[in-house]
Length: 227
Image (cartoon, rainbow, N blue to C red):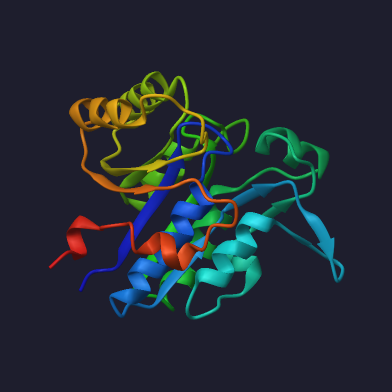
């Protein structure tokens, strides 16, 4: 089969992109595929054994089989917990599209499926001259939108979907992520998202204190792999 690859973006930061991406990796592995995650740019890292490491990237690494080199999975590990452009500036570097593409190619050579997790929301820049849409265009892959289920999610989801489409990228699906356990009228909001988003829902992830990506995979359905 052709390489399966998607770019996971979100309606905002902190809405469950990493959990959804890790769940997708487990789901893909459940189909017998060699599935590897990628976090091209990660800001907010800790120094571990002399190397900068990001918690989201490490979660993707844990969900990947086979295990790639960390430097390929996360080419830009930026220490400051800021927008990538600012974090890269603090580190005295600028994010290069070619470096991202080279790392992606090395991962693709080892995998049947790649799940690439973006940073923040769709319109968050990677650098002063590079948008996430530029990277996705270069990869020629579709996007999956993670919708953080909380007050305001309808506006954020519809604007994000509109922006993705306007950028000439295919929105393949969306995943609901319950980030606010106290949200009212959840089912009504889900119904309105189903009715209005121009792509199928790939699953709904519940709010749990210690989510297990392998368990989340059971709540996901990837249409192109479904029997």
